Length: 155
Image 1 (cartoon, rainbow, N blue to C red):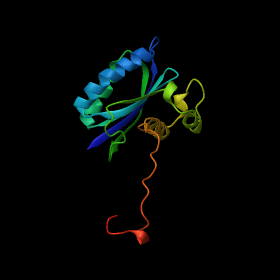
Image 2 (image 1 turned 90 degrees about the vertical axis):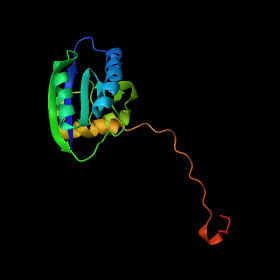
Image 3 (image 1 turned 45 degrees about the vertical axis):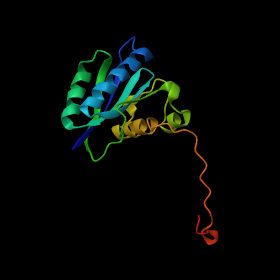
Image 4 (image 1 turned 120 degrees about the vertical axis):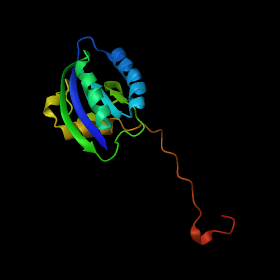
């Protein structure tokens, strides 16, 4: 069985990108070992995070986050059973303001200061999922296929 949580927290004063990158480096190893996947948005001094894994592993990580001084006012917005992973193969995807698409932000009603309190848990989950989709390179042209009517035995 899988469990998923969604939480928001204010970054403690002095928490900048260097700190966040350090968090992610440590999270990759620990989360991989614990079977946890997820996504983290760091935007305007706020963390929005989705974690998924076994209920025991998610509960342990949530307890550790509650004690982490880099988080202020951690607010658990959702805890639910999950039928499948939304972040398969991502020990912890990270998106910061610099790599978030403006159209995506606008589609979620983003305003500077990112007032997360006004967003319900399902909207936050969708935001993190859409923001953390793996970045793909440019589309490759499709291979031309021969028209079946003109195929020869060597096609």
